[in-house]
Image 1 (cartoon, rainbow, N blue to C red):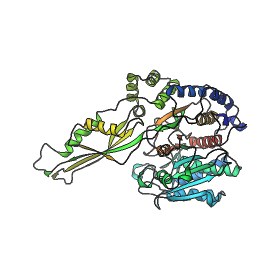
Image 2: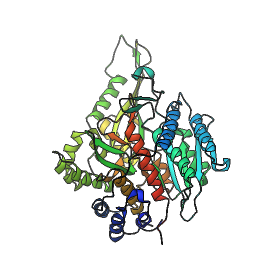
Image 3: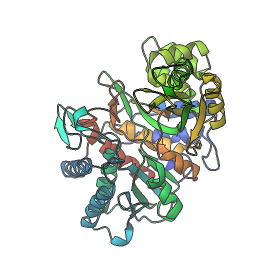
Image 4: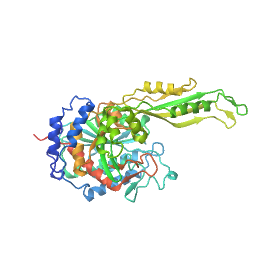
Length: 506
């Protein structure tokens, strides 16, 4: 890909000609992304400003033609209705269904890979060949889902149901919509005879939600790195934010927190419940958890979150506007008000640790010999595991409560803010939703993008699916995706991949 965003000047007439202004300003104001790390906040803000003040392209149709929409819908429905929960389902049938679609569209068997760490935990990798002028791009989506119980939902979570302008079902938002779109668009590229300047690789992978030894990305990196090796990747983790029916921003995820789990344990000799003593394991654990509930890690910003708050201050029109701008500059008072305003801002501004599982006692008529809790921490990239563990030990303030690390967590680096990626996302966003800004974010959760970044493949979370910021149901009851949002995201990703797959004209 050429330096900056020059690759995007000569896109199709359907996209309009507004990209010329964006690219010109980008080339004038931005250094080459090659061999560069994450830019400092000031540089990042300058880059964003250059893009946001660029010319807005002409309005375009916001969805693809009906036959393409129908194909995307059908694949989406098929994926959602295959139970692929971490413990009760399997990803292999989803991978096989995708492979069947690709074979029917004419993809040769040699370009389709099926495999995984377990027969039930299958992954799909498919390669669409380009000219080879540029290194490949990887399009990633996970096909496992969080467990869902019928009694918890108002409908069957594994039926794809359209109702009141929404598609309902487990995985409709996280992450089978993007998986379906990658496959549908790849089939469309082949039908059109599109010849990209780089190979386009789609990987649908297992156990992003459950992690562990069957995680598809980890398994592919270890056993078949050559199948997914790419210059950079597009993944989940960034989506469109809306409020009150108005699109606020199209978020581009460039970094993420990482997950650290700890087990708090209290051991005791126990005894008969008819003769209670003060030293009770459950009470000690309860006191430790109360200390944790009252504690908050320090509030701070990093390069990505400072840029996020600065851009959101330009969008926000309510009372938080000034606090957003001041928080970007390091104001502790403003950060405190933002953290108190919404759980999302709180999680963006600090490492968080919360108790998620409890265990204690062995009989109704016996004093407990063990009380334990799992504490799930979502850690800022710049905070170390040792820092979090030592902080928890100080907060617990009881040497009878052990703090044990579970697993081997590792933070991942941020992806460099490549001007070509930012320009393409901005260009595709402008073509569908003129005036909606692209905002870089650090996602509060975790994705498989971290493993790719650690392996040296920069990864960007972007989807173009818009969700109401106050009604995001990932992992929750009655998960859903707006019908129009799905089809617009389908069109957005179709254009974005094309933009990123062509080199600049000479």
